[in-house]
Length: 489
Image (cartoon, rainbow, N blue to C red; front, side, top):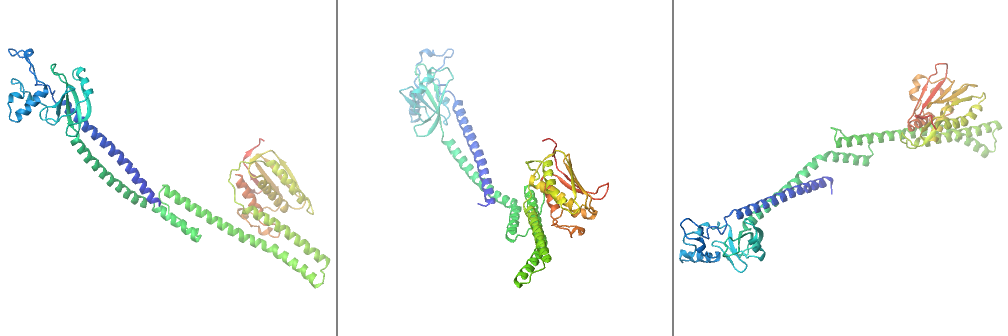
């Protein structure tokens, strides 16, 4: 499912849950409110026994001499009067109890355990044995329950005691649930319709909002597909604002810029490597062709010439070996600035000095190396750092005049290599760490122009810096490599 569809669906689901919760709460609140109103209407109706029995009055008959009828007899009398009988059959002639019956909306049924009868205008509700326990309850007590009347309607029932001591029993005041159920049913359908409309509107709105909000993502997707299809890394996304889409666009632009720079660097490395490899390969091919032609023609070369060709081929092979090793070193991806492996820099430097010292001694006039190394522990790649120090020492020995000394000192994380050579002109200092760059005055000397690039890379990977300085006390150059660390073991 597309992202915009998922967002629209999630919006619809969220709105559906919210509307469903609100609708359910509203329905329950209205239902409880209506039920409470029904209970209040039933409880607020007058006592069914009021007016059915005589009360003592000054100068009137003695109530003790009066034998009231049961509610069922009164109900039958009222029914007879309604059918043309005598009104006196309905109620006591001195007390018109008919006027005191509850309103017709509240039905009243008399129940004494054996007899059940509805008062005039009421629909009977069957009594239950448990209803009779209210007879012995304190005055004003009642029982609430649900029931079914004689018409099969569900009703709400309040059970109250009959106050007549001659006819014990209870009155069942009831009201049908029908009107309330009809209102609740209408409310339920209304809430369902409103919910469906709300959910549909939320889904439509969510789809429109998702489409508008994801338009930058669509553009970014198109740009990524274009890069994947054409390998065109010059594509850049417009950045506006500082939201997540803007950050994503900035990240995409940074990624394509880094990839383009990496590809350009790789292309430049290949071009430069091809140019540097061409010279030794041409010399090797020329020497080998001369030797093969001499063998095939049967005309041996002069011994001195043959030895010169073989020595030159060996030298070119050595340069090719060094060049290929340097290329392999530079072709591997750079590691993070922080490396967790501890390295004893003084031990690494000591090993590098021992490796380069024979090369200085092999010159016609030996070049000596003087070292003063103090303990220093840093973090990085020990092999890469050793090779970087070897390259610095090689350069110092190569450019030192005959019989000079190269001074190596390590203190407080600062490694300095001082030579007495011609030095580096100020205009060439910005280029010394570039790949395959060689000073015009040094191009006649052996080398690939990759040594200092390897030194700079090793310094970056270990979080250090490398720089060249001009000595204040004479000719030469000071190479200073600083690596963070500690003097403790």
